[in-house]
Length: 90
Image (tube, rainbow, N blue to C red):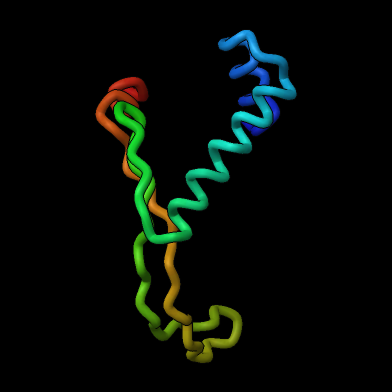
């Protein structure tokens, strides 16, 4: 499912127009991204939790040349599925 399919599914499930459903999905993803960019967490009960994890700087290896390279520290988004989502998948 891509974003267009998700918009169609939300529009069909809620009775909203596709344009309104698209704006709702955009607002939701922007709100989640905004919270995560500030280092926060977003918990959706039954669905899961979005959080930010810190990755330390480390040394890596260029697979083409075998040369060592430095990989900078970074913050990466994480998602932990909730119980209801896990059960729905099984």
